[in-house]
Length: 509
Image (cartoon, rainbow, N blue to C red):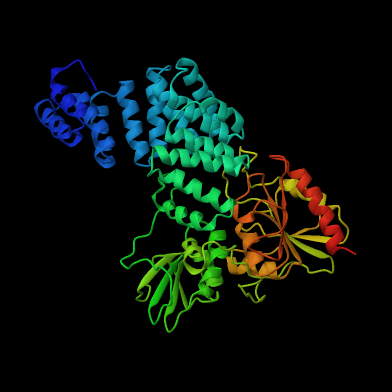
């Protein structure tokens, strides 16, 4: 707030009393009386942000900027309003503009560093937040944002050291993530619970606790906590809006149920298995999914009809997200529902260039570009390491990396061959059916391999997802999949050496 003008004092008094809505009305009156005052719009924007009225905050911040385009405080505020509205690129530009007028403005440095890390650019964020901390070494917000960057860069112990004395929910949550990536599930659980003791409705901490509990095989509590994912704005997961109640289990008894996919393709492939466990008793099960999955999942067990999101769906009585089904369809305290094969695909259309008598291995090495700077969580493996497997005798490789050409890094693997026209998961499934073995990072491809009951090897990073358990050998959800995981963060070579030995002794004469 600007304390230098008496115009704002009545509103400031109301703010100090916690009467934010009344303070908003006062500022609107001030704007009517003094429409050219930039800080009236600026202060109103701050209040609207506190009231979570982001559209109005953006409007008022924009008006303040138009009246005072070179004020670093107003530029910062516009950036913050835009960031809260999800306009990250525009927000970043206004933070940078604020710093152009005041290069040592720690609030702008802090916000810029935060948004760079949030948009998967921690290397850019690091020097900016380090500068901010040098300028203001006791600012806990800066320390927390820098700690989050350290986590993003695979430096969790440095993150812990930086924020271990901060007693806020956000700090406890970040400490939990630092423990989580180091596979200290008990420590992570403790920190997430501390966060929730401070802020009981902290959706991000609830979701993180859920994933930790699932790692610990505390399924009943884990699936209950996982429902908080819909309230966690940080995961960018939008809850679909339906005009029918959510299904809570039991026989359908002539009623119709709409299941809907969520999150990634692999999640849908993994959890569609639960559709076949539902007792219809005269009812029907419809599925809403992404277009890439339609042909594959329309014939999944239990599914009567499948539709693309946004298309016309027949009348239904209940709905349920796929990843909520484990907690609905089976006892919450049991192990995951293991199935040998539940997606049956006929091999018709996709033909490789040649199908020789060698051991045919389909490979997949790069999924979504997340955590690419974090050796603990980066799922992508260097494709060049497949040269280790190429040294095995009587082996041919087939590229399952859809919509991605063979790269120069694979130039030394002369046996690589590709399947043409892989554009949907039906195509991928047919390609998988024509190879003997799939070797893949944690991806939709390896989930599909397991769902088909085909032999596969999953290459796991150090802090692998909960669904792959914590050990080696046969995967918990897929009896046909063998797990090989990093024992040192970022060390993929040892994983490939172990896979090479396994293939040699298991598949080659």
